[in-house]
Length: 160
Image (tube, rainbow, N blue to C red; front, side):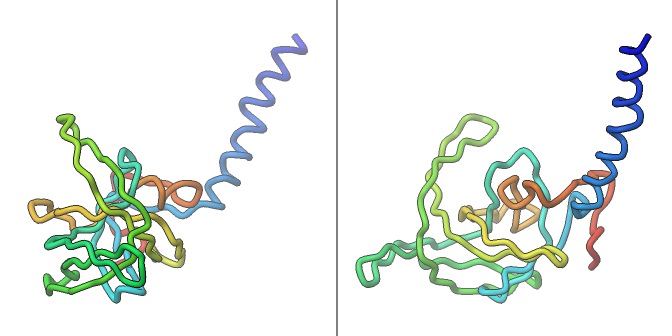
């Protein structure tokens, strides 16, 4: 009897309190949110994808450039109004990414500050041609981890 009481106490009494504390520490977001890349002066409506390991930014015309013995990439992206933006960023690494069909591509990875609501984090962002995608920015788990809870039934929780 004592064991059953303790079980009920911890599952019904302790856990909800811990869960509500966890919710207070995290920011609720929806499936679509605005993100800012302050250093690039670019803002995007972003799709939140808890299945994606890494955050991804639309990039085309990607060219390797060496400066002072370091590898950079020169590329173009678009802002929230569809205006083309030319950028030059230091390459942090490269990664192989496979899509749902198993097709593997090599992507350049840069480090960028990303701001969602009041939270700003520096994370790895891979560069990918998202021309055919509705959203030019995809928020992956590396940005979400430990800070956000996603409610897929909502969007623009952080505002327009």
